[in-house]
Length: 83
Image (cartoon, rainbow, N blue to C red; front, side, top):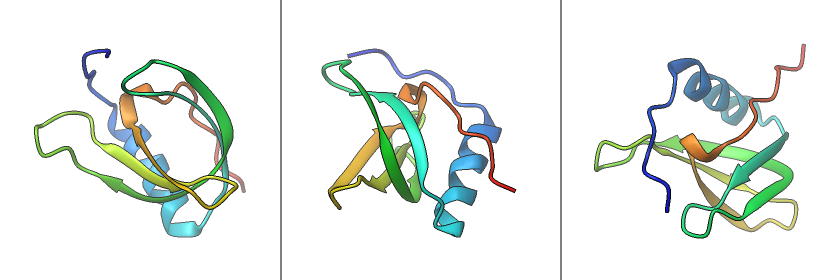
């Protein structure tokens, strides 16, 4: 498992906006325990703080409706906003 890294505020803000607006994102992230890479369309639900002071998590739904919990510092891309 990779040690947690700080997450810039603009990353957290971008994901919070996506959750509030119901935006679907093409996201590339790594699994927290195995470091396996994933690429998929997800619908962010909320950004969760980490009680231990870490980077926090994104709770989202994948295309099959399964709930995902993605550590924020393991997101590999930051989708640009749709205007």
